[in-house]
Length: 114
Length: 111
Image 1 (cartoon, helix red, strand yellow):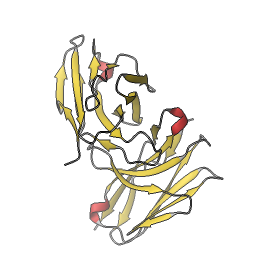
Image 2 (cartoon, each protein chain N blue to C red):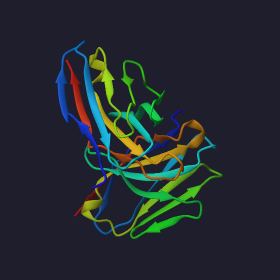
Image 3 (cartoon, helix red, strand yellow):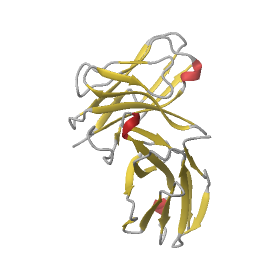
């Protein structure tokens, strides 16, 4: 089954404790991205990757890091989480070549930083 | 001004009725347009792409007006299961194939 898998689904952590949210896709997609969703603000892009070893900032990259060492994986790293990073996070992947292709989303990670 | 704007609703719709809502986008270089559906904080899922000539998928009809920079979604014969948030999404290849999301329009279909 074609899917994007995120882990963990739920996470409560303390300020400053480094964490990683994993994202893996099995569709051989070149393009992967991370979004956060907050009430009243919609989904905003954090980082994206056009292919292995190619990453770039989205609209709200501050406080986040990513890596793309393998095509299927695109982890999101919070080196020193803060309460304003409490949010619902989605990873997505799609075929890179065409603009008119469907993006597939993971089930989301609900992060609370206290 | 947000790049993609939607009426947040909610649109309260009697079962069986028709509901329509729009989305406006500010960047004329936007190339591709989509409607995604999102159920109660679950992941967004593609409902339909929006083509220049307009397109229909069952009870759903999408229209694109490039001159006025808006897209629309019409739902006919609304079902209870149509209750969801509908996200308007635009794509610009020049911006790294970036998807930009509207804030969503909430639709509640009631018996």
